[in-house]
Image 1 (cartoon, rainbow, N blue to C red):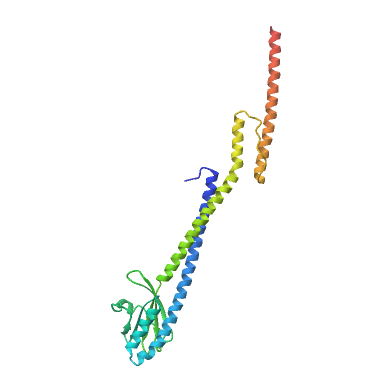
Image 2 (cartoon, one colour):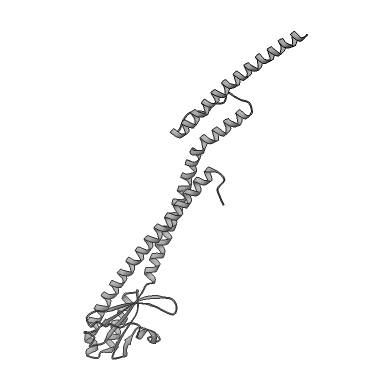
Length: 259
């Protein structure tokens, strides 16, 4: 709906500016923060996978699966962000941390092609949970491959928290902007309201109406022009009244001559 008054227009413009700018800033900050967090998470996941692959190599080579399982379980216990771990070799899963077995679709979802470095894939579960999946070769791939899944949930929760904070800050800024807009709108419209009131008094016949010259250059110029107009109007009115009196006097003389 189009604003009916100048005050409403000023406040609407202030609110629109704050909302649009706040939304854009929040989106940019949240996006960059999210990208930074996920990059940090990927680096962290690679470090964990690399260390586990080194620790698991000797256990696999001596076929100590009990120690290998304990290694994975200890890692899950000490790092809550790690959602799952499993080791496969020659197409078989040697050990894992799943309670009901490794999901079949997950086994071939990622593979380390480089025997010296791991590979990262983004995986989404059927429940919509996002994971950073790292496939890391063990002993150059000769002892198998370690798979690690790092949940993105804690990082996405941090991003959501940032969005909430940005929203609250935007609301606070909006409230302050509306208060400031109301204050400046009142200052901006006060001279116009005074001119309106003066014009109404003139309409009622009060020709002694003047407005105070104060404020910004534009306002003082308008007030000065208004007062100058009033001086000319009063002078014109006096001359008109004087001419009317002369005309009445002459009409009276003509009436006496005809009598």
